[in-house]
Amino acid sequence: MRWAISLLVAVSCAGYAQEDPIAGCLKQVADDKRFASIRGKVALGDASDTTFAMYSNESFATQADRAAIAGWSEARVECAKTGESHRQKERGPLTAAFILEGEHVLVSLAVDLYHRRISYAEFNKRRQAAADNIRRQLAMAQRAKAREPAWELNTRTLRAPDETPQQQPAIGNLLIQMRPNHPFVPR
Image 1 (cartoon, helix red, strand yellow):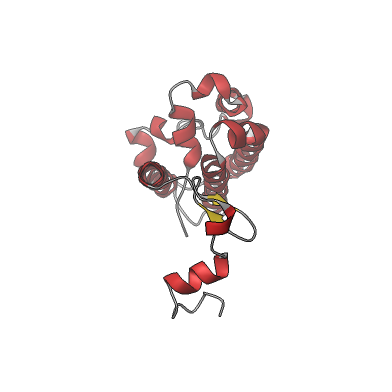
Image 2 (spheres, rainbow, N blue to C red; image 1 turned 60 degrees about the horizontal axis):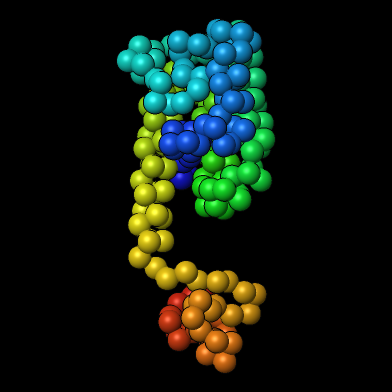
């Protein structure tokens, strides 16, 4: 499973909190009294707010915690959905996809915590590992984007910005030229 909590990166980006509706929503979730039983066991906002005590809490969810865990993870997913169109437009589809994927990973971890398959310590460690991984992935994507020319994807062709339509190879031909023996390239 690919670990990605992109929400953590998105919220920490400079100026992002004022632009994206997700930041205000997550602040409300973190302050919500319904989740009081898990406050101090998990960072209700950003994973970077996880404390030493949270990382070392080897206890498992109580019955009261289970209801709070379910509500908290659902509320976070709703927050991620609130600004999706804004992120698509302002931050790009890659960041928007990472945010949604990150919330799905968080829900998966929350399910394991809810069912007492993992302790709070394990949840917090995995969540932080996911956050670290998404930061690396975003950094690599940004570096790759900076090195590559802008490519425009059309349903029939790939075209560099300075190419005219006569110079455009068909995608199928381009893929076959690039990797003639690759098992996933159509023949």
